Length: 219
Image (cartoon, rainbow, N blue to C red):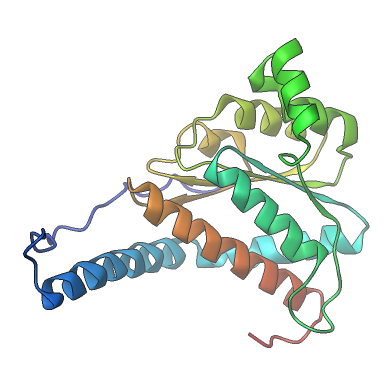
């Protein structure tokens, strides 16, 4: 298991007050304040997890080479990130990089609503994984809080099927930190900063997985 996440931090410096009479310079500083905060959070995040990301990229490559699949899930904005990860692997944006089998568990609205209506919203991902997931497959669960029950249940089920479990989280990691073999926790309580780091992580994981499969590092 990975080490516990470091405590989430916030930027101490305050952006200038802004309103209807603010100057162009004050608006500029507001933009740059948010940019600096985003950079600072990502810097801390990747400095902490760089080694684990490198190791995980190689594990993903090994499992893809063995014919296994990647399953991705999340709620709300994290559902969009799940779709983003799947399409990156299925349709690589870099010429000559191979397509790899990755599937999000959030796109089939009839399936999600049927399970929610007939059973429970907490079952929407675990029911799909129990049906389609196979030993050796990989699962990524994305949550800014780390406490979504439907993700936790799915990761627990994935572990019983000998699947590689991965979580993207934020704040203090939440319950996902104990439910996944790899949990990458963004050290922030800002939903925006957490999501920005998750997107950077998914791009780096995608890129380095292809590199680990012997493809050229072109980015």
